[in-house]
Every structure is written in C-alpha cells, then in structure tokens.
Image (cartoon, rainbow, N blue to C red):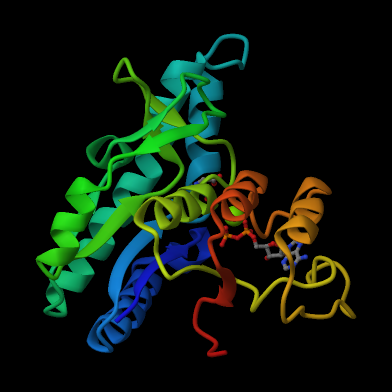
Length: 237
Ligand code: ADP
Ligand code: ASP
Ligand code: MG
C-alpha cells in the first residue's frame, strides 16, 4: 500500500463533469489500497477572474496584497468541497481542508509566500481512519493567521510540499499534457516526451518559463527527494 499525493490542475477540475472524472480516478486508486491526499487547483480561469475583480475595485488597479490573497484563495475552496462531495457520493469517505485548516504555515510574503512548515497530524489521522484527504492548493496561512498564496501555479508546490511532509511514495501531477516534453508541446509540435528528467534539468526548464511545474515545486522535490510524475488527467500511461 502506497501513500500518494495527487495534484489536479485547473483544467482537470474545470467543470463539475471533470470533477466527477477526478473522483472516479481517485476512487480507483483508493480501491487498489492506496492512501491518498489530493491537492486541487481552482477551476481553470477562476483565479484570473478573481484577480480581475480585485483589480476592478482597486482604484489604481493594484489590489492590496493581503486582500488579494483573501479573494484568490477562494477558487480552491470551491473545488475541494466539490471533489469531497463527489467522493462521498461514490461511497469513498473524504474530507476537504483549506491551507489554514491543515496548517500550511508560510511566511508573510502575500501573493508569493513560501511554505515554512506543514502540520501533518490532521491528515495522518484522516488517512488512518480511511479517508481521502482533499487539500486546497496554492494557499497557506502566516504566523498571524493571515491567508497567503504561493504565486501563480502554486498548487504544484502545495502537492510536492505535502508529499515531502508526509514522506509520500510519490507525487503525481495530473494536467492537460501526458508528461514533461523537451519544450512546450503546445508550441512546438515535434517536442519529445521525456521518460525521465533530473531535478536539476527540470529546475532549469522551470526557470526558463516552462509552466508545467512551478519552479518552487521542483526545488522542493529536489531538496526532499520527492519522486514526481507528470501525467495526463485521463490518458493512461
Ligand atoms: P495545470 O493547470 O494542470 O497546472 P498548466 O497549464 O499550469 O497546467 O501546465 C501545463 C501546461 O504546461 C501544458 O498545457 C503545456 O502547454 C505547458 N508546458 C510548457 N512547457 C512544457 C514542457 N516542457 N512539457 C510539458 N508541458 C509544458
Ligand atoms: N489557481 C492558481 C493559479 O491559477 C494555482 C494553480 O493553479 O496552481 O495560479
Ligand atoms: Mg500549473
């Protein structure tokens, strides 16, 4: 029996139907006997929508960073509850947590916070009780109780950091491509899929702007030796 952290990005949870598909996939892993922690992004487009709202109401188009975190963190709160409901409907015990509820402690750098510590107690208790734990990506809380977010694409980092904290066997990043390619396969049609890539090589790719993995997620994976796989949200392999 393995402990797996699965992260699903915005397109994978972009509609209720897709969240149902994620629930089916999670159920399959659960039935195979794995312990699962699932990290979700907001529905695709939602974070942009929330940022636009904040910009619109801020006279100079520059939202107050603390308040921007309060609003943008809501996107993930919606998807985690929906997935937990979809799992429970399928007879799979599940519980959702925001970053604050887990206690993903970060520094106070609003909009680009760094994870400092993760309290694994609650999650371990749920796993022991047979529950799938669904955690909001992209967000944490600082020592003063302020909601923080980790920068765009930050749910990848939540996934890898949780995998490191829980000493998970693997962190699986489910997205809209079936792996890491030599370059963005949406831009370069002859891009080749890589079977393996070292943390250092992936770090270089992420620094050059490849958004398939957030740079801090790769840094975490390298530092804590977390095996990381990028997988397509429904294609097998
Ligand atoms: P998610 O919403 O699941 O986090 P992202 O849009 O952040 O997904 O990241 C996936 C996208 O990364 C792909 O659609 C692809 O266009 C892009 N991408 C950029 N560089 C690469 C690469 N080297 N390999 C694979 N995908 C890449
Ligand atoms: N929802 C956040 C974003 O759009 C985090 C993520 O998707 O990883 O940047
Ligand atoms: Mg992303």
